[in-house]
Length: 77
Image (cartoon, rainbow, N blue to C red):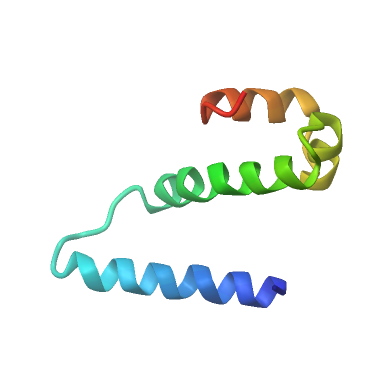
C-alpha cells in the first residue's frame, strides 16, 4: 500500500464519518483521528519489529522513550 493509498483510505473514512454525522457539527476531529490511528499503527509497527522498541522507534522516526510512553498510553506495553 502506497502513501497515496493510505491517504485515500483516511479521506474516504473521514468523508463517511462526516456523512454519518448528518447535521451534527463535528468536533475534536484532530484528536479523534490521532487516537484512532495511533494504536493500530503502533501494533503493526511493533509486530513488524518483532517487539523491538528501538527498531520500532527508528521505523516510526520517534524517540524510543516517546514510543514507550505511547505504547503505555494505548495499553500496549
